[in-house]
Amino acid sequence: MKRDFLHVTDFSTDEILETFALAREVKEKFRRREHYQPLAGQTMAMIFAKPSARTRISFETGFFRLGGHALYLGPQDISLGTREAVKDIARVIARYNDVIMARVFAHDHVLKLAHYASVPVVNGLTDYNHPCQIMADMFTILEHRGHLDDLKVVYVGDGNNIVHSWLRMAQRLPIHFVCACPERYQPDAETVALAREAGFSAIEISHDPVTAVKGADIVYTDVWASMGQKEEAEQRKIDFRGFQVDDQLMEATGKDSLFMHCLPVERGIETTDSVVESHASIVFDQAENRMHAQNGILLKLLHKS
Ligand code: CP
Ligand code: NVA
Image (cartoon, rainbow, N blue to C red; front, top):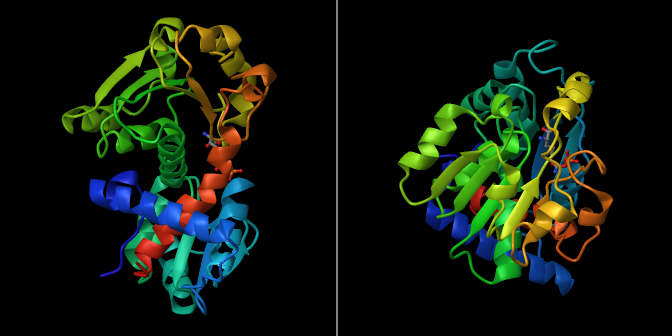
């Protein structure tokens, strides 16, 4: 039976922890420049309907370093759902490649790809979620703290795809997760409910960032206007007033908190240059760990571990 990775919850708690262990192992091998090519002869098709730096570079580089070959297919190559039906391209690609990675607009497109493809499908971001990002983020937190106990993560900003993946992570690992967002920009209610129902994570939705960040181990933010929403950027700057992560907000945690951002960052909008460049900032560790966490995921899906 092939496995997909479309949501953090597609993996059990044990599988998530095993993925982190694998990520650490492969990261070490890469550091030592060890010859390690378990995916030799394999190919991965990468479908991009949206722009990307990290996702493309980390998947392509990571797959290559594991011995495989990755193909970049941009919006002009495959116009998902317009030039060709998702269910058709899924079956065509699966005849050529061992695994598919897709970054698309509609979440339904990755669900359909996974349903029709006979090979594993990995979600590289949809309008709904970004599971590889949060796997890399949690792995980064583990590296920095040495453990994941008593973890308070406060996300400040738009209740978007990043938040949905945090909420899914909270269904698998215990987190005190707070989303501080303007009232009109709350995360999906059903995803919030699922995270609460899982029973071991404390989930809060707040509209007051200063109170929310108190005691935070991690302060996390993301752009206010995601891909596909850029025409709303000016309105959102007004709607998100008071939600910028600046030095004062970092101080309001009352703790040596770490700052995280999935990148790309819009300095001066959702956060400041000063915070991104501060000692608290671990944004480039996060970016690096995209590759290692994804390699862990790919090795699990391709039965190499
Ligand atoms: N964080 C992230 O997914 O970055 P890209 O959009 O550049 O891939
Ligand atoms: N929320 C952002 C994340 C980018 C990695 C977006 O969807 O554009």
